[in-house]
Image (tube, rainbow, N blue to C red; front, top):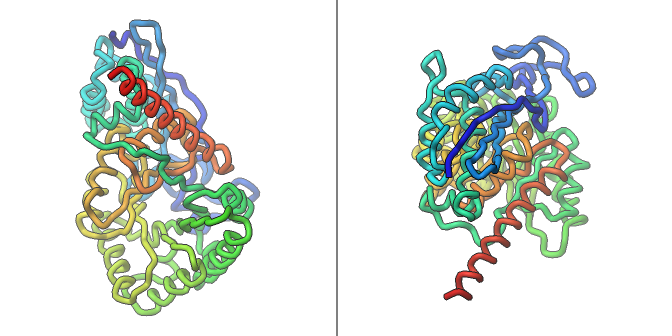
Length: 421
């Protein structure tokens, strides 16, 4: 079997591109839009419609498999690649990428994905992470088709990993509807919730009081609405706003006291806080996160901190893990390029005291979300993001059902092999 042709189709994504720097600097929300001028290069407005680029691979047996190039909601922030424009990169896919892949055997996923990772753009830099992300999804689907196995199996083989034998805990994200959507999650018994989108000081509270009040409310509603024996983990993303609320250094007693207040508000459920600060660079961020983590450990405050800002590439993940700068690292799938790179990042956390959260963004597509479900299973990640979109229900359905289908198919194949033996 061969890859006969590669084509690209501009598409829409599951949410929007937002200028994170403008929002955290105080851009005023007006309905669903934002007032004010953008700050991050490439943005024409603070909020813009999300874009994606579908990559189709035509195989020699007539099958067409797909992957979707997608970029994170907060593109261009925290060291990430610039804003992704589908029309701009369609020619790249149908040119350089097609030239590299046409005629290749789709069975060899690892080799094909590595070939794409090694390509450069006309300016000599690596291809945009979104392009590598989408093309690798299509290559993964092609390999699974050619081998007649699940995408989980292809990835597990490529990564030398032992796949999960049960669904990975799904992390629901609420968007700004942080109460209504959280209640949906509680009723459905979502294992990790609610994200919360605390992306401004106004939402967190000038002294962090609004976040503490929210966790107290969430804990109460979990006991009222959750299924019997429900034991969720609370995970809130504060987008670096603690840097504005508290400021460095992050080992001061009052900061540990505040995190203790968050733990008490969330009790009896565990809580983890994503992106407590944005220190402006990777080294600075690692120092600030490690400083905070050590302070919480010294004070006996059982709140986990999650790395996001400046933790984008595989090398970034490795640096955060090696320096002990986080209890959890988000492996933000579109930012790592090829989807196998996300799997490698999850595997790097094995044997350390840092857990891997296979994340991504609400601004992806159903195609990329389904592909990521297989990465989560292949590597047995600590949790996986429900995506795309901010409505919660749809993303939870997409990721959960894909994992269940893959597990059922793998279980059926095992039974067939055993019967044949």
